[in-house]
Amino acid sequence: MDILVEHGKIEEKEYEIVVLGVFENETSDFTSRSLQVVDSSLNGAIRDLLESKEFSGKLNTIDMLRTKDVLPTKRILLVGLGKKDSLSLERLRQVSGKTAVRTRELNIQEIVTTLQEFRLNSTKATAQAVIEGSILGLYQFKELKTESQSDSSSIKSILLLERDMGLLDELQEGANIGNIIAESTNFARDIANMPANIATPSYLSAKAEELAATFSLKCEVLDESTAREIGMNAFLSVALGSDQPAKLIILEYKPSDNEKLDTIVVVGKAITFDSGGLSLKQKLGMENMKYDKSGGCTVIGLMRAVSQLQLPIHLFGLIPATENLPGGKAIKPGDVIKSLSGTTIEIVNTDAEGRLVIADALTYAKKYTPQLIIDLATLTGACRIALGIYASALMANKEAENFKKLITSAGEKTGERVWELPLWKEYSTHLRSDFADLKNVGGRDGAAIIAGAFLSKFVEKGTPWIHLDIAGTARSDKNKAYIPKGATGVGVRLIVQFIRDLIGN
Ligand code: BES
Ligand code: ZN
Ligand code: ZN
Image (cartoon, rainbow, N blue to C red; front, side, top):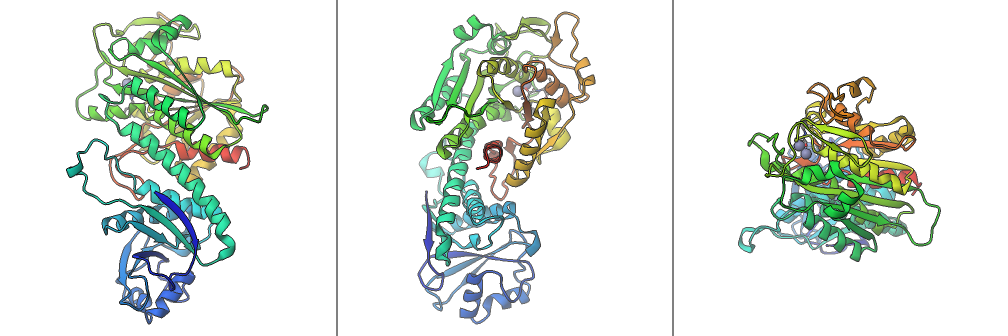
């Protein structure tokens, strides 16, 4: 898709359709210059529409107006922005997503928008939001449909039409950033939506290697025998019941010229299918367990975004990838294994497998002496019950106090909100085992936190660490303004924003 920024005026050139934003109950003195011009060219047609209440400007409502040859452009797509003082980047992303999808439904191939006229925060951030919302909203997963079934048309280009010549550079910059971030999120969505018979651990490692070749990242994949040699038995125990070989995927991004950069390690859970293992899940909804690799997919998308944006940070992505199946060699409830850290674990429930693979990856991360570790995991059903689909759960150690504030504000900015759950020491008492140092489950009460408490045991003392449970946010079961049904790619936008804020970019 081409992303364009051009100097021009809606009244001067012929476009198939142009998107204009309208505030709620704004019936005269329109904020948008383009809207003013269009309304007066059409003899107050927009004002009439608003006064008649046929179109109210309520958030995300859409109406279409034909210009009847008064203007060179044939159609105007009016989109409601809601109340003027409530306009935010989030709302701009939403209306951009909505209008992009509507334009596609009209079989038009070029989106021309003027929504960046509502400069919020900065011109650059506004352009980013409009482009991001459009590209994210247009996302479709069509790879597995045969030609005849995938009938919807596609958008070829998005144009920010701008009256003010002096703003073009900033708009272009913001549009580029939005384009990279949204395409990287969609890249993560593509892998996460792929079913488990195709998206195996080997598939993920091939994707990571492909990405590394295109975007000058380093990629190393540890196979099972190497993982066994170094003692990653928590990780490997999950893979025992599957015929698919497990892979520990390691991606590294380092801008060439700088030696003294902060190092961050991001770990992503990639269970390509979570059947529960011998602690088998119920069949209702089990198809959604292909999404249990979402954390890993986000890490892949994140590496893509950060390398394309060339952010000055040294970033590692660690993706422990395996299936969790109940094959003949599968780990059994009651089995005890020795993790990479040396801590022994009694596996009471084989469905609490995410914490096992993340635990070894957290230990592995030590070798990079990072300033911060972040993990992303669809870790617990309890997290979805606690926070629903509107926030990822955040847990962190004391060392991460400042990072926690920064990631929380990045969540507000991007709409990928996080909400903290406490990691008080009492939660850890539930993990005491009669047979090993730890057991992998601690009952139903506070299960999302107990999972976080389990992970905390594998983080090197003194290393700041943030855990994000994305069980409620990684998948959407309905179409939202810029989040179509299916994998959301949650975390890519959040962590890119976090890193940009951290380095003052
Ligand atoms: N992958 C699941 C968590 C999950 C559930 C993610 C629903 C998204 C939607 C995880 O591996 C799991 O099964 N967790 C168990 C933990 C329990 C055994 C302590 C759970 O949440 O039931
Ligand atoms: Zn599980
Ligand atoms: Zn799982």
